[in-house]
Figure 1 (spheres, rainbow, N blue to C red):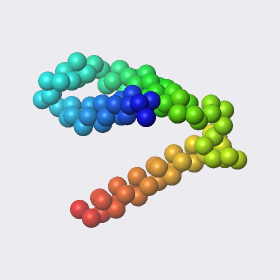
Figure 2: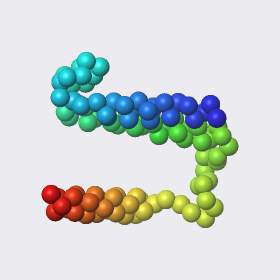
Figure 3: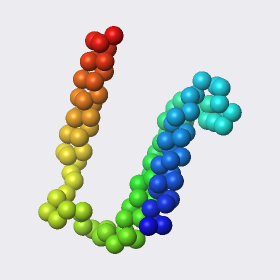
Figure 4: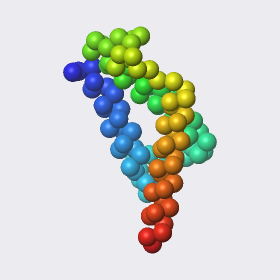
Length: 103
């Protein structure tokens, strides 16, 4: 179970830091507010790379195979990922459209 602590802690830190308004009022993240938005966005790459690394490490240490999927006979593909993204965007657009029409 201790293998899961690092990615869970990082999840918590990501949630906490993304919950802090970037309006200049917070003393905790002043250094981030001084960065250009492009640099702030590029920081997602190493942050989420570390996040993926920590989860994969936790899973493999817990006994999941590095080469097998969680469900035999199932696999992920680029097409699956792209269709998932289209579904996410569609759901978000419908939600935003409905929320806007209720105002």
